[in-house]
Length: 250
Ligand code: PGA
Image (cartoon, helix red, strand yellow):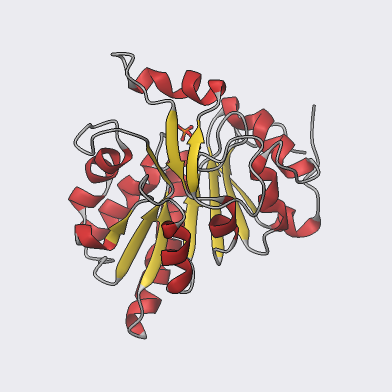
């Protein structure tokens, strides 16, 4: 099936690259330019971050730019999308551990400027982010079931940050990272309201396995059945795809 993106603005915001690595160069440049612009005017840049396989090429590129002296992260605060429930932050499969290994330990961001939702009071994350004026830019992957962060199907567009039961398909997709079989089945996720209140959203998807869900999320009527479809209504969502993930778009 070949799907048509729902409208012309959406089409304009879809960037198809030859590879994830090439797309990552363009996204990293966009982020570093925005950080530098904020530095020039003495402002904090608030950057939302994702975990999983999708953002890894981008993190490699941001580390490269930092090592080359092209960008520094002194004025950046980061806000991760999610964390597993009841996992030790020392566990390399926790998203705290993932972020240190794949980004934070390799750049000059003070760890106290890195933020995660907390199971103690998940909605406090929304209040904290709203109190600083929202996020400037947030990067997202998409789950094979159309989730963004861990907003599983059924999540409404005004959903708060909260504790959520993971979908069976999410557990099936991610259990490869927990070979001992100890994958948590609940997580704390940033809610769709805070995600959709972000100024610029960057959704990335790589490979054939994401082609169907990308085509569906861009062409269906936005609904909680496919949470990523709500991005269609956001005024500034940029889609970065490779030929594989774009292969079911016309
Ligand atoms: P992935 O996961 O980056 O590992 O494909 C994406 C997601 O579940 O949001």
